[in-house]
Image (cartoon, rainbow, N blue to C red; front, side, top):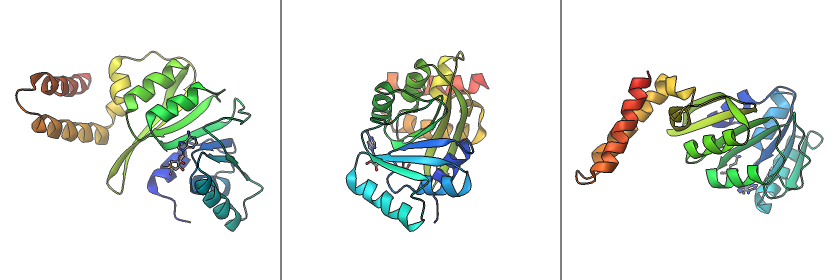
Length: 211
Ligand SMILES: C[S@@+](CC[C@H](N)C(=O)[O-])C[C@H]1O[C@@H](n2cnc3c(N)ncnc32)[C@H](O)[C@@H]1O
């Protein structure tokens, strides 16, 4: 089984031997990889029946039915979450992720990769009593991804930490990516929209000054 680079990096953040709850498992490739390579047991869940049927087919093919339980459910509903579980939510949007986190009992370790609005995600998860333990930025097939491991606990953050990430704000590859992205955005904004141009210029400046 060929795991994508993105999911391979997600797997590096999962605690060896832990029980994993993979919300929105789709094909269950991550769960299959983790049970084979990281000594995990998994609960693979999805809201979509055809996605879960696909997961069940793949799990059967790899004879991992005893190590990976599957569940058709919304988010973490009907799952008995334990504090030492690793909850993984990858490939969903920030709004859905926040809804899932707000409506359930959570474990002490969350590994999350959102499709959008990472600042909002950081703010929401930290406000639930977590801190950022690791953050990884990567390109997979030219698409940028951020994967964050949150752990239960308290840390103080500045606004720049929410915007760019307390770890990623010091990461050269991420800084270069933001620099190029924001410069392109500024170029594309008409001169008369001075406030929006200024907003991006100030963000770039803050990232630079912070360094
Ligand atoms: C883009 S796929 C991501 C699959 C996998 N996690 C990954 O990162 O490759 C998103 C999956 O999340 C499922 N999903 C969306 N909203 C969900 C929810 N509220 N609860 C559970 N699964 C959900 C979709 O059905 C889909 O299979």
